[in-house]
Image (cartoon, rainbow, N blue to C red; front, top):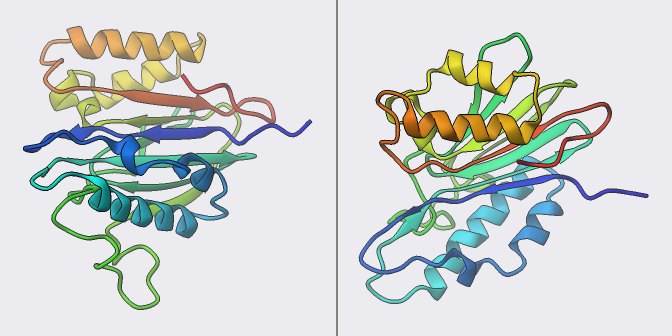
Amino acid sequence: MQHAAPLLLLATEHPGKGTFRLECAAPGVVAAITAGVDPAALAEVLIGLDAAVRACRVRGDESETTFLAATLRGQELRWARVGDSRLLQLRPGHAIHQLAGWGSIFLGSDVDLGGARRPADSSAGGLVESGSRVLARGEVVLAASDGIDAEFSGVSEARLAEILGADSSLEERVSVLLHEAGRAPGGGRDNLCVVAIEVGHGSASPPA
């Protein structure tokens, strides 16, 4: 029996004058992302999603959103991202490594991703970040809003690595992370949403 590739999706709204509803532009986007054969194809999905957002929202709505999509095919992680969400990798016994993050362009922003595309450039002039990485057994990948940063969550990278590398279920580790991010000194200063996945023995643990 063939199992579907695990899929991570993360979107966090930056409100404007109107109410942003990503789902108005999203029919079929999950299937398109799942079918993405490489990072460039995932980037194309996000460029198309940006166009759909612009087409369906009401006049005067200046809201925008981050969007991060990642799939795991076997042990190869493929992703595309626009906005400031983070994609973090933890290899047991190592420090946290950031795969993607720190972008300043969002879906529905004043920059049209399709219009920004350069000839022969499928990543809209680099505004859509995409890539791939082969993961080893036991590695954890965390997709998170920028509320994961220590200045907002109060959770240092060292502590984040300790939490994600703990000897407990992935769901328990995510619960600990969310609990500490809301209660640590200096934490709870921004909204935080996370999705995590762990590569196991020839497969991946269900996202938590």
